[in-house]
Image (cartoon, rainbow, N blue to C red):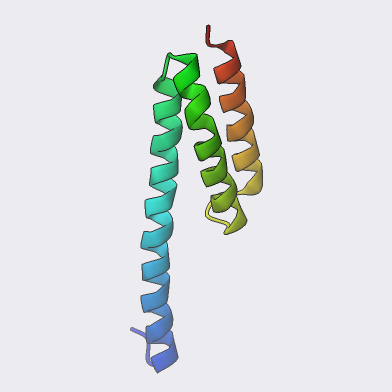
Length: 84
């Protein structure tokens, strides 16, 4: 167990941050999953800007890597364009 006050505080902060990041990471994955399960092109196109914004925000604060955000955005755009 930590002996210093600052160490105890750091542990509390890290746990809070971990739960926060985990929540937003899961929310992002669910949003991407929902878009990929959509078969209507108009609906998917309407969802895309919101998901793109979410991915960019998460990449900005290092919850996900910027390249992962770019790859997901690219693959989602390709998926939307392939829908008939």
